[in-house]
Image: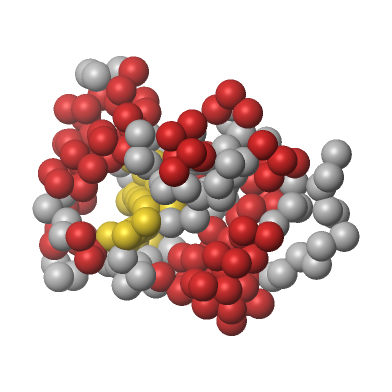
Length: 197
Ligand code: URA
């Protein structure tokens, strides 16, 4: 196995000092867990570098691994539809994942993989500095160590950011009936990103 466990682990603070470009380079070089071994591309972010809203998914799937772009496959189409429903302009949002390399067969990332990758996520968020963070599913929620949120529940973080948990777009592909509830949860929280425009 070619995992390079001797690579220095940068703290969130150190990563923040590198800026988005430096973080990207560090992720591209990262061999800190075995997921890098099968990654065609690291999947880092898409969207605005000054977003009001950041969406956080789980991990890249097959299409994302091939293209190096988050949410560019079927789940991405669903997410784009939701972003449209939310009335967000192109320059108002960014999309990132909790884990930057595709887990084999789209399995859930392990706790160890999450722990290894989370500093990249936290540093990205600190630099992007959105007003609203949308956690797409349970894996994204775990990364924030918030005590279990209900679907659609919004809380304010110690840093003063609105944090909301919504269904992962892939769940909406498999259970179409959840879409109505997802839209209700978006409607309930709409004021949050409308009033900050
Ligand atoms: N699912 C995710 O969580 N992220 C992606 O980028 C694609 C599918």
